[in-house]
Image (tube, rainbow over the protein chains, first blue to last red):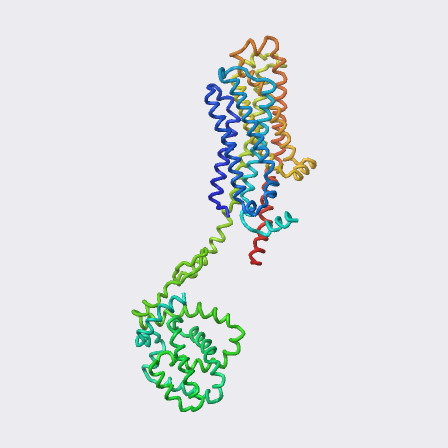
Length: 162
Length: 407
């Protein structure tokens, strides 16, 4: 059974990482005076996304549903989050590489092209969807039914066997 | 517990047999004062034996003896442990003596004399045997388990300490630490005072009442509620900020956008921070609006969109505003770099061509955000994700209760 204190701590870490991600997405363009600062911010952001995905995966592995073997039940709930997290991580890394590559020598000049702006828009939109799905997933992972044997789980198990 | 106490007390009883007489002595005072009650009870027993009870006694000496002993324990203030062995001895003796009793009622003095050696228990137990053998035997046989349960527990524990401590405090306190009771809590046996036995149950009840307040689901609900408050603040702040932003732009641009160089000159330090703040507020508001619609549940979200639910309309507006706002990132950066690269980015005469779409998009964003805020404000308490969590919670507890009942 998942302890409330452990869940609160994990939830706090996840929300802190999400907040940092939102902060970097919002204000990284303002902090571009020194390219190194932006580089560090982007590296930490990508690691934060990776950490968040790892934490969610560990929480999924920790569930009783996963131990029973009903991975499909978990995937049904969290598939969109996992797919979008991967997509968002890829988009973020691509955008960060592109922008830093353009601004590394001269950070304060106009670098925008149509391709970069398209990537930028998709990365920021994926970020918003990622925030929504991740926050929702963290809240749903507090469901006590995922961590203990219950008639609900037995019903799901029998349905899965059929 | 019983086994342990038995194994402890046995050697004492064998070695210190003269001491055990006084140890089990709550009936003793009657024997010390005069022996007449003993003989009376023996006579009663012999009378009943003469009335034909002997035939029942032989098989019943063990079974009924145990049963009667249990009841004597339940009614007497004696502790069960030290008494376990002496009655068995007497029963063995009685087994030997019973044929004599059967054969001749004159065996009474022998019984009295034998009991005189171990006066203490028989003085009280023997009459009880005779009384309860008739009454208790038939109901005992079909329900041995119930009596076995009664044997261990409450009544003897509650009554035992009183006479023992009052009569023989020093030796009894050593052999019988009656102040402690081992209670099973959290899958372990823990020592507890008998006087506190009532309190832990209250504490357990309190814990059972407190526990649902701090489940993981409640933490999730609290976080969700907290973010909804932040989102509600963000909706209003974003609407006001967008309206303020577009008003400032139009004021600086002059009448019919006639004074665009002034706008660029005045607004360029504000353009990029305004864009970043707009993205931050739009992201928070969009996530909050998606939470209200419960967008991840596609069927529920689609139904909300088709029924023109205010939250669904608001989330759509926020998402559209987000896309439009992000699409102007390039222009915002161009305005931001107005003083540094004036010649290349802002060729003379092209300000109107570049700035007009940006102003229109900002106007549309402001309208969308304002409308979404109005829609959200009509029903600020509506939150389908929270209802979904609550529904899951309500759905779960009856099932758990059923599981507990079945277990």
